[in-house]
Amino acid sequence: MQIGSLVEAVGLSLRTIRHYEDVGLVLPVGRTSGGFRLYDDDAVERLRLIMKMKPLGFSLEEMRQLIEARAALAQGAPPEEEARLLALIQAFSRAAEEKVQQLRATIEAANAFAVTLEADSHSSPS
Amino acid sequence: MKRAVEARLEEMAAGSERVLRRIGDVAAALGVSLRTLRHYEDAGLITPTQRTVGGFRLYDEDAVERLRLVVQMKPFGFSLDEMRLFLETRARLANPLLPERERQELEGRLAMFSSAAAERLAQLREQLSVAESFSEQLHTEANRLTGHPLPPRTAP
Image (cartoon, rainbow over all chains, first blue to last red; front, side, top):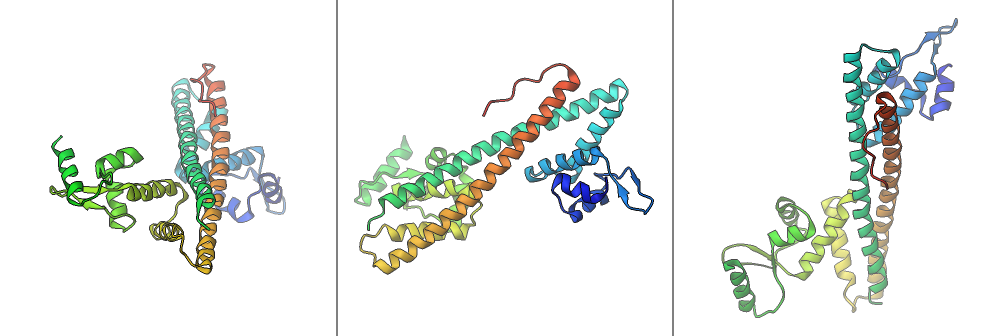
């Protein structure tokens, strides 16, 4: 697919997609006869992953690590390498779960403030 | 024991029966570090009610309440100035003799804080949703790749 379809598939702007391409996180798989870049489903998947990692504060380097690990595993790698890549994925899985726990705690604390404001509005003398 | 006696002597000297607590106890009760409390004090968000002879900061119920609010406001990313403004607004509204026009202005200000907080809370919930989706995806993938299930994730 050309970049227009990619934009539609993931809901990111052209500029954003080009940015991720410039830093090597997304790769075109070829060119049309007119010279326009072509992308496959893998590009969609990579961008969707980036869209999950970015709001959680992962760096470009961390995104690159995970994307490349998944790509290498998909291609098939010697057992030692595979074990290393798998360990990396498990580490990211744990990091993601940690972020979930952090966010839940933050939201709970934030709710406490909302409750306080509510109580305030009911008790203020008027 | 000696410190408790010190504090008590201070209270009696002040002629007040207010309950005063030391900075360490307040920090522990609110779940924040001493350093954070001192930071808020330096920023003028709270002032210790008194000091003991030994120089220990003491806080009364009002100060502890203000601190509790500051701790609650933290997740919203309010600046120190904004938090100070909020506390001030709230304190002024507690005055039953406040002229009506001023009351309305201050309540308007509180409403703005409320809505900023609500917006931030919505953002945080959105982030949580993304985080859960990401965590789920990786968990499933790692499972599939190993054939050995990882320890179960905690349920929401």
